[in-house]
Amino acid sequence: MAQFQLTLKYQKPSQKLAFIISCILLPVWSIIIPVLLGIFIRLFFSGNLGFISPIAFWIIFATFMSFIFMGVFLTALAEDDRIYITNEGISFPLNYLARLKFKRTKFWQELNEIDFFKNNNDNIILLNFKNTGLIDIHSNHFNQKDLDEFMLSLEMYGKNIKTTDNFITFKDSLHVSDNNSLTFTKMWEDELTRRFSNTAFIPLEPKSKLKDGKLEIVRQIAFGGFSAIYLAQFNNLDLVVLKEIVIPQNADATAKEKALLNFKKEASILSKLDHPNIVKVKDFFVEDNRQYLMMDYESGQDLRQLVAQNGLMNENEASQIMLKVAGAIDYLHSQSPPIIHRDISPDNIILKNNGEILIIDFGAANEFMGTATGTLIGKQAYMAPEQLQGRATLASDVYGFGATFYFLITGRDPIPLSASNIKDVLPGSSQELTDFIIKCTQFELESRFNNISQIILDLNSINEKLLNVKG
Image (tube, rainbow, N blue to C red; front, side, top):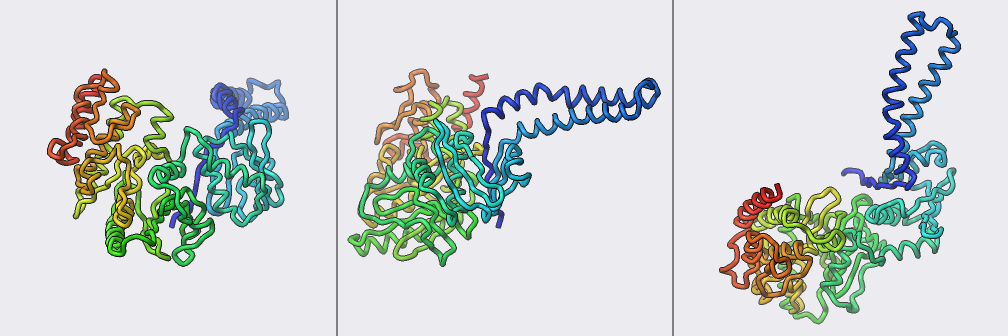
């Protein structure tokens, strides 16, 4: 199994200036000084600098070399803006070398205490290591996503390390903070809030163990209704997302049995899927009358958050994203038997940190709960009419696809149970794309696209036209 590793960008404001200066000085120490040094050496050994003694030669030579060495070192210092985290320890940027007694990597077992203090608008995390003392980490030197990853790492590997009340308060404030740069963790929290209402359901506590101790709950991401989502660690190594579903005690016994059978059947199918644009279901299991789906943990923003942060997408950008989504849906529909996702929406599609698109969550668990409780679960604005009647088909995913497309371009949730016309919001939209989305979201099944393969063909054709217009 591969070693757990995170690479986090950690850049001080002064480093940006240092990087600019190092770029300006790069030709001096990398080209001009080496050329001058070469000329100097050649002239000296050819006898043209006979007035210079051997001692003076070595002094001048050492001076030239020191300029080159300092140039290399300062450039490396300015460019080194990464913190590396593994299950063994933390590797700090070069500017920490002196404080770390020239030992760049510190192991988790060397960490004695984690503290925190606030200096004006600067939040500072203090890591107290054996032998080296306090190492200060400034939260504003991270972007929001990397700060979240750093805090998760401290939770994972610092669980047996003393933490002060100040640090715990700061950590808890991050979990409930409201910002535009939302992570995958926050996305799951928002998703669950949209799905379920508060009940007396009691989720698992951090450090709870499942699967004979192989799976440990790091923390709750969100909970409500009869479901919860957790960040967990598997085999003391991999981060995973765990979705937990509990059947209410008062549910009908027959519905319970049917729901559990359907859940196991679909979870088994989902765990065998392998597509770059679909979240990997690693495992499913039942423990203490609770059902679990274990999925890969991925960092990124869902499409709703992406639009909220960056604004509306142009037609070409949205088309490129939705082509990848269509490819993933086509893969699901081509399975034997075909798999209906049932929940295609902006909230269930994330843009990963590497730029790839990933469909997360499946309607399997949601339909499971709906069968057990007699309650329809889903996002009405993105659900096809036949799905609202409890008869999801392959064309239901087409409807969700078109409704999601509409959202990316307009920034608005579509009107439920109606064809989505982007010209109603943006009159200048292209007619081809307008007609395309309308056909995806037709009320009647027979008026909608027959299959996702046809969608891919038509959307590729529209993309070519959009690119030609842009060109």
